[in-house]
Image 1 (cartoon, rainbow over the protein chains, first blue to last red):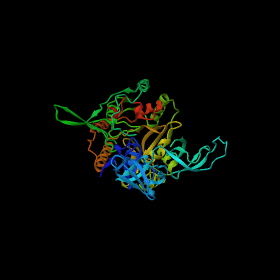
Image 2 (cartoon, rainbow over the protein chains, first blue to last red):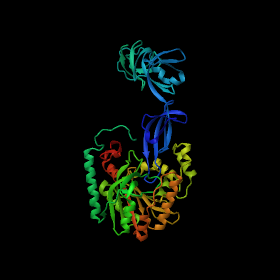
Image 3 (cartoon, rainbow over the protein chains, first blue to last red):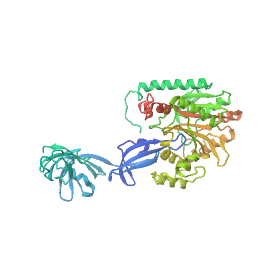
Image 4 (tube, helix red, strand yellow):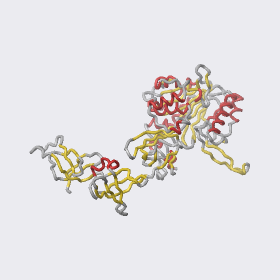
Length: 189
Length: 330
């Protein structure tokens, strides 16, 4: 079993705590002049995204997590599962709905995503930062209103709902920032 | 922060501007003590023994000469305390030292294994007289008002409603839990009252200490005496103090223990503790005991982190900004 000692800690390192995989976000060395040395560490749970803080005794070891990020192409959704493929090797991986979570709202067939694998099982998928998607439903908007004040909701081909300016219409393509879920601009297909 | 294994390049970690400020501060401190008739001394960085404190790890160094066909183990000093007390016993009068100290396995935002320490001793000063002098020094260097002086007991009562002089592991653990300090069960079982007090201090209090003006915390629990005199009032307290500025622990001072028998006993306790913790054995510094037998004048002494003082003066966030080259660059 591979382990990391606190003095090997750095941000991005993947470890196992209480059976779950975590990534180290921050590591602060704390030592009173005459006291025991500790590390105050912030960890992000790679399954839930939750951030926790834990204090470790300096020199304490934690189990290393076999977590790797791989570039994969999103292939298709068969109704229950989402299928991905490593382009170079044709290796395929599939996700169920619970694991894929809200990422499914930004997946467009053939887009290249980052898939995080833990012990070779899919843990989460990070879609590209920007995706271009087609609007399938939105109110026509009032004619002549170009102020764009609050915008209006639009449903995209993936089922995602984003706020768009009033002038954007059904069947148009828009560019969306997947990290914030916000409209960026109109786009060509 | 952490130690990056990768090469950081040849450039210094501090700007040349900060290194100029460093040189100025060194000169300013020397002038401060010169004016007050405190003698500058230099004691060896390489000694055959060193601090026995279980939470201070020395860096070992080997020395060879014809007398020692096999290499003899020495230590880079974790503080110049023992040798400076030998000078005091030899009649040096008030002394200060501005020199390097070394501590293994300490690296971070406020730590570098090799650092600069300002340590000084004042015969005939009690701890409050020495605190007055620290007020003067900090006023001069940082342009801050006199420190607020609080006892360790008052601070813990105010912050946690806990009496740190008469508490238990259970009470402190419960308090840490209320503050959502998350520690694995395995480590939790090994923690002592002192460890828990330190955890509460570093996690919940320290960052808020000394923001408006410096804070000097004094009258530590007797279990945290280290080399300080213990006052057998009720409750027993150690005549030890620490100085905090802008949430940073800056200095640690004692009304010095002068009784050779008590000193020897504390060293023996530390040796025992080191054995229990599986730490390497370090020889008891009998030269210091001999010096105390001849007579260490009643004195107070304090060690102050020079690099941290400069960080505070220049408002730096990381110790690397005030050192020419930190450990990851050498």
